[in-house]
Image 1 (tube, one colour):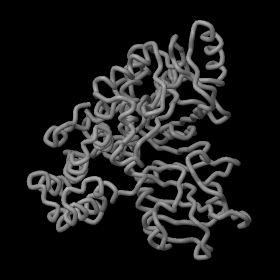
Image 2 (spheres, helix red, strand yellow):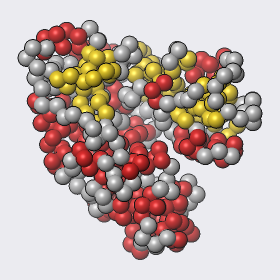
Image 3 (cartoon, rainbow, N blue to C red):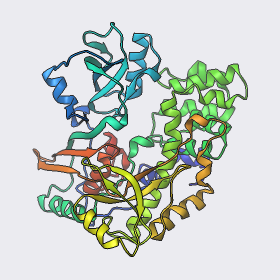
Image 4 (tube, rainbow, N blue to C red):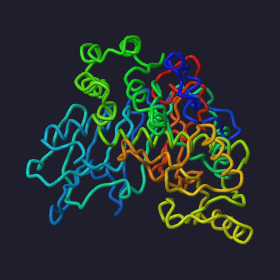
Length: 458
């Protein structure tokens, strides 16, 4: 990925977004049914299941409470409607007089959706009954040590695809059969990068490459034809004049991170590191992780092109045992001449899976074709693994991770709705994206179809 100029990004077409975030291939050969998700927030519902089998939607529906004894934090349930997770966390922390960093979450949930998720906060007697925010509701459940992504077992989804072009049971069945045999590519989805302004990974690449000034200016000023026209105009004006006072006077309140950065730059000229630190730590880390995710996506795209089956290991691949939830556990091991047959058997039984690194400063690169793919992307990017140690902003560095190349233990149920609708129930292990599956079924040319915007390219 080149560091695109602001002018080049401005002309990004909705048909180019997938390539722009590293997703370049389908593994299934069936025609897509087309359609649209998230036409209404109700069309996309997602809820968390955590260790112990606690189901966030069921707990909410049944209004269950557990004993409040013994731990330093309160486990809360949050239901939200058409609202960003970070916005809800910010509003809750402000109401309770705590820092946003004191609110722990299992993961970010879609904005344009109805979501149920677990969060935790330090114990406070202020939280006894339901708290109401704008489009978000929070209830106490029990006491807990802490909430983190490691506590999350699965995300469950109920999704309605509307405006389907080809309503064919045969096509859907054939696609599901192909995916069952070949594996569903475990791409990082749009949410990690943005759709109407997919710049998170570009800002991350600038941070990794020590271009901190560029990262700040890009985050504030980069615009696309896909975002709101008034936002685009504000960003273009900033880009032309690099006037931080203009941002403070004109950027709307919802662009709060841009405003926070600009305020810092207006008050402390040339302190670009300080400006980035005005953004919540979760988002700062997300920049670098998104860049790492982009590299993974690009390498997985090459792997799909070179190998039609994600469940067939090559000599030199890395593999890992899977826990009962479909998540890699223990040490990764290299596939070699002596263990390849045993590894194939364990993959077929769902006991192991092929993994690729999501780059960071502590991962091991595979050998063989998949290793060549990821090394070629790193070379193209002019980046080495040690660059993910960010010396100027050490808190955003990443050790990296290992991610299965195919989604594991995926539970899918599909039924045709009325007219041109398809209803999908989906259950995925943590870290996998529903859109990675949906794009194989839908095969839309325009990425806006995955954020609720019907476009003539779909």
